[in-house]
Image 1 (cartoon, rainbow, N blue to C red):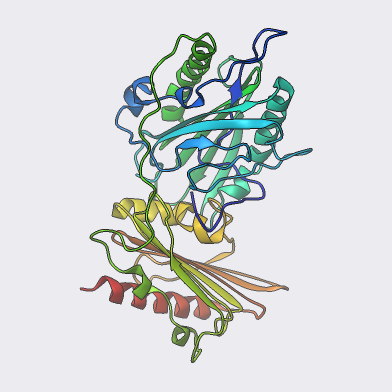
Image 2 (image 1 turned 180 degrees about the vertical axis):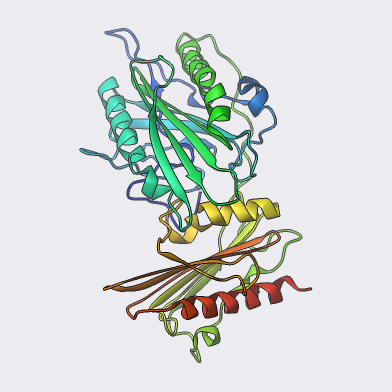
Length: 395
């Protein structure tokens, strides 16, 4: 999903990407499948998924576990391997956007990975299961409560597992992800359903998993035809059409008490489903040893709020879908721009976590210092960021 964060040590995507396949009869060389025909398309998603648009990140997966279209990827680490040993390739179709705030189904992601042998497919399943156990860290963010619960997928294939991962934040609908994987011979099938409630995800997942497994069996028997859907275009770096110039909204060295930058990196970077994204790293940053800032221009104000709150907005700069800081909340009611801040202090120093949203604009700031910071430091930094954001958006 991101150019800046292509590898996560232990990660599972809003709907993981490793899947399954069935072996040919003994003594015969297994036939190669058109893997792009296995994941579910709009016609198979049912009423709950009929209106969901195909998302960037869909497409083929290489033998290294990364998407071949350059959309970034995740290496799933498990005990005894990274889940890609023996991987031939795969394909994923991801429909929808989990950040719309809807209480219904917001995303359906299905995938298939082909391994050289059933034993290697089972190792891929074990790695995916291991990664889901860390979902609380992966999907964590300041102010967000994450719960992870085992579930039983529909009885298809030879081995399977499932987890329901729920992110909850004050005054927002939760984001519930039902993540299921099934080994079928030398293939690993994956299904992730995201919704604004557990009941909405639970209602459709068993049927979709059965359809996905049946579709694989049809292809293995040579009975399925057609072609994969046309993939969305790769998002371009830079200012979104009709959107503001995000580069003029970032903090400046003077905002943190510096006359000039010593080490500075800043650039536009794709961050779907945001329409545009800008990233800045300043080190040192006055009071702070390091400061990172990401600003996104989202399709709607609701998506800006959900994206920044639940961590998707900071996946590009601060870790894949989360790894947000914890700490004590700081009162930022006087800052404006729906500012929310957290301060974490300890013997090793301090860290700051700030989010702001103004209409379709959302931003996330993390900063760290060896010194012991106070709430006033967080308030000052948040106010400086809000001033830059408001000035960039104009009247």
